[in-house]
Length: 304
Ligand SMILES: NC(=O)c1ccc[n+]([C@@H]2O[C@H](COP(=O)([O-])OP(=O)(O)OC[C@H]3O[C@@H](n4cnc5c(N)ncnc54)[C@H](O)[C@@H]3O)[C@@H](O)[C@H]2O)c1
Image (cartoon, rainbow, N blue to C red; front, side, top):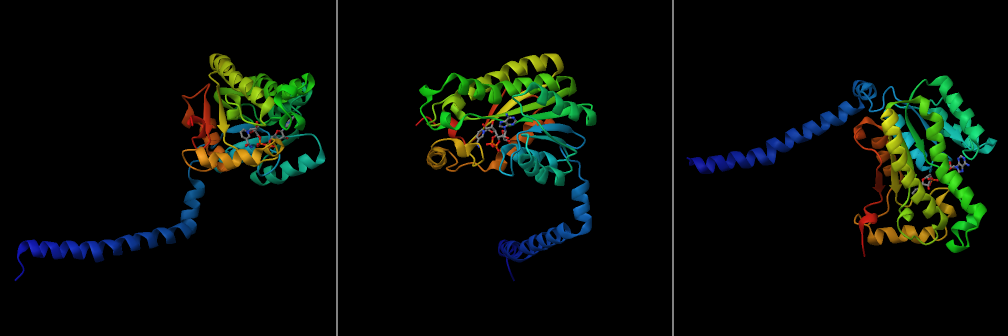
């Protein structure tokens, strides 16, 4: 006869080695099978998306590496409907159409943000389809190549004005011209980089632009919040390979440097910017405005 403690030990061992693993295995099997059934797929399709019924505007998709596209993909996956601009020209239009049409974008139209008429015409087209918008993403920057390869102190007046106009003023301008369309509580997002507050070799005039952009985020957040409870934020992204970043002198060195110093010991994936963009455009961040939100594997807070 077994005494009670030994009997209990037998039962415990039997349960942990045979019964429990069997249930776990059956659960896994069930889950795996259910995920492939039409019913599961239908339930997944029919689940409420975070952005269901929301409409917005995306400025700055050039190709499938663009950070604007990373954000748009996440917004689309959660049910958002979007209008896209592209730089004037057939080639740019083709590139953006290839991406935006398959996700059901009805408005894909040219807009050079350095031209007031372009911005007005583009937003006029958006207005014809959408009475109100829930979000606006501004992911645009430009500086003459020499400004990003030569030394900063050589920046000339014209290049400075152009970089500030396209990379900073355009943000104020699109907010101004879209203002009547913003639904109360709408969210506006732009993209910045650490070069705004630290010296980063090669970032040069764009660092000055990003400093002005981040300051604009705060002033716009105050005004638009007061006038229509509209939120204004920026994602400050770690380095990602895109068309724009290819123009920054020494960009490869920046990419190599981040994993050696960032707390996460890596660079970010572009789609992590997409995730943060989704959060800031959605009601999940309803209490957040005037914020510069770093998505950089923690690099910005390291002091050595
Ligand atoms: N890639 C990075 O490492 C990185 C890091 C931090 C911040 N950012 C910022 O992200 C934003 C998007 O850049 P990206 O890296 O995705 O590169 P990208 O080249 O894909 O996007 C830049 C976009 O700006 C547009 N643009 C330039 N001049 C314009 C004009 N006059 N009118 C209208 N559109 C114009 C281009 O067409 C392009 O779509 C920029 O503000 C950039 O500074 C990028």
